[in-house]
Image (cartoon, rainbow, N blue to C red):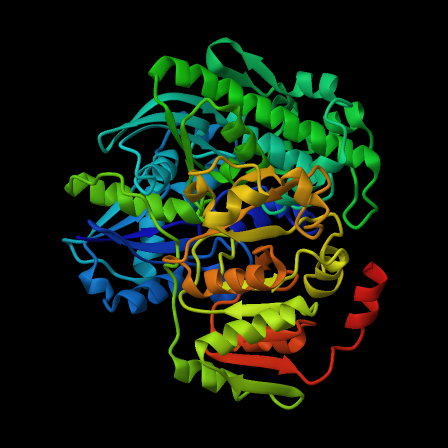
Length: 598
């Protein structure tokens, strides 16, 4: 069978704007249904996957994934007529809750209701009578998205996000291919919402910039606001958590804006930071205490259910599972023998889980370990050549054989250049894992500042991730030998071994940590060869790996986008297909900023 999973709530953004009216643009992110995506799955696994943002250029869009669906169909070489079931990663049902106020009535009748979801889909793709439209509970979709690709026959499964239909944290057992819900925490006690609203208080975008707060946290003191956060988040017996801070929203409008929560945060912690204001030490300390609170809460829940179930392997998904620092703490705590985090753990991954849940209803689907999520579109050489034809003057293009391409790219990186890499099929999920990446030398002390200020045009405190061949990972990073596959998807922060922290300054965060990606030759051959060549030259086979995009832009999808982004950027070179493209001169201002960063 062939199942199409989708995520997103197409009408959510429009209704939210109506509720808020003009002016409160940042608060429009306080909603559900972002990260729309499409995934095709059959009984053998994933066939294709694509996020809508990569097609329409709107980061984290919740728009109906029309282009993503078409992309998946193209990859698979099928049409909608070949689809047996469409599965959506939400299952809202009518209840008295939706009658509490006008806003809730509107959310249900215009956005959440099952007939609205079916109507939205059939407006683009009419369904035959024998094509099923399946509504899958949101947290079940997340649980399926991580359990079935984990390869663990028996595992504890933790789902944590802002909220599903009414849950915010759910615990499942996965045994023999079957998922069973064993505990759930309501959205009124949401770890994801707590993290998000503090992100909003700190002047960043909720449901978008939580990873910035995670990156800011190591600069702060985790103890400074522990008493205050002890009131905001409480750990209860039996692995329960309570978030009384969220009860500060008293009115329907406060629930839409979190103004009640922000008011309480200001009373306890001082004025909220406005977007664009300087980040002060107080903000760093708040971020640090928030991160500490999240980690302690997750461990509290996991200890209880590890003890109850006796399960020694863990799967995680949901937006909170993208908190790589917390994932690293869970891993190092040693509660579980193995930990797997599905790389598209946000709501884009609920499309994957919905499709897997649909296949499971008809087939004896068992967990099988996923490889790299290179499930998106790839492009023929003719498309690459056509895109390069639009590049214009001021660039040198060379077509090289594989060995020369690797050698020349490493020459440039070793000389201090920043090189974009566009190869093969697009990754699914928020991480660039070697096919849509920007690479640089981690040994250059000024490289992080240069990448942040000039190339990525983002906050200076943001860290960069290292990529390393799997067989060398435990040499440079504090991970147990033999556990390298855990780190394939860049989802765990681990300590850099002390002797290499000064050797790898561009990827070592202020606390001595790094969000490492291990690279297998059989899964990512060209990327592995670049790392191996780097090691042969420098003695250390590590590169900075960050996503191939600029500020406000999703990761590039097509050769045309790659070339256009390269042309308007300050990147020094582009490896696209079997071409190496270099600028004839450095972009204006690039060298000055880089030197200033030194």
